[in-house]
Image 1 (spheres, rainbow, N blue to C red):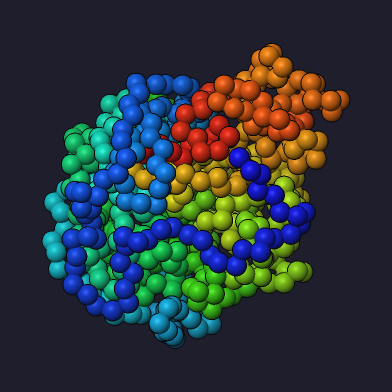
Image 2: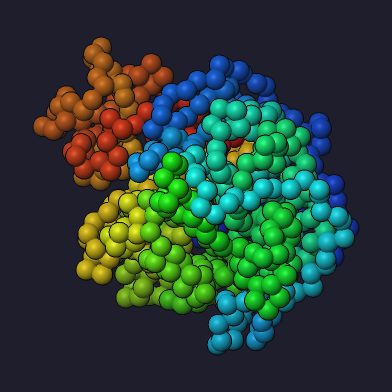
Length: 574
């Protein structure tokens, strides 16, 4: 794996905005007739062969369970044959965390983009409004319904997933394992809960939602099967609107109402259109659950964020850039979130986001290409400095994430740190989707006069049913079994490959054998664990690792990089 390393303190020169392959997704701006291709794939659209393996449990702290293996040489094709299963789950046991793997709008249109510009008054307090020509759904909703959690009920086992393309599934392996092996008390959809990109057609969206609920595997073993698993949800771009969309999407109210229908939210829910002028603008929500056998004690506090409905343009193609005024959540949701984080006490807070939170701002493109960039002395640069991520060793995903708005990301992470330090939770963990892979991440927050002493924040990404990206994507906050630099350069963003063999001897820890006068390891190995010549680094002191190796379990299956906690060639993930 080649190291992706820009020059210190610099951003790359990639000017194009790389993102998801949407060749099978309608993105029209004019009226069209519904097509079966919106929610189905041709039976002949099959590629590759299956290579089966036995189901294997390789850990309890980081759990990667592999049912079969297939590496697709064309990962962006609509293949239905990848048959590896990866599972990630998160649980609270007692008090310990276990990570087991309106008005006033001006519309401007062009052939390539549609942008919404708000007047000076804040519209984030709702209710949601459509500003485009949004055609209502005429198809009846599926009679299949989800169950809702009971506030205050005991919850200890939480499952979560995202990016659900029912027609790409090759088996019931994920849903069956979720129900029969993991047995969650709660299931969380993290967005892209179906795929239907449309600028106007709510009937197409309705039909795609129906197809997701009526999928045969979802019906047999998913949350809607009997007994039903209580389910909550947020959304991401492909169920919200179109690829990478934010508040410029023209059908904000209509799309939210289809979300409400899909998850059959009760009329008393603030997100429901029955609330009329008091309807919440956005699908964000929170739930408090109790500690099992201690039902008077708050255990898991689940906070679900909506990072679409109020999000400012991230790049000029999405609308007018707002610089330092860029927002991910909007004023109303920020006020709500701060109240949740600072006024409610629980053992743990799980904060869900449709896009990743912990990866730093990507340096694959110049800083001034980001809409949130406000100059070298502005909030964009200041936030990355505050997060200690302004150097060359801070690498983030080139895909969507909170890193595209560094000031908003810093605000969120500092809020989590403050919540812990004010005794509102023992830990805050972010649950995210979007990326079509699994990874576990951690970040140390520096001490702050306002936010308190240094704390470590954690995040788990679980995405892709049944789809995956086989790609080396940088993330310097990804958890590593043991961190290493590159031949003594002091940038500890590589990961040791254990075991490794040098001169016929096998090593399973860092040792001083590379002539650097310090313990080191191989950062690249061959299939038989032989250290690749020149691919070594000095090891970070063990006590500086954010997650001790002794607390991990890991395997080498279904990796597309040399990093153990980045799984991206599996059939599906939860």
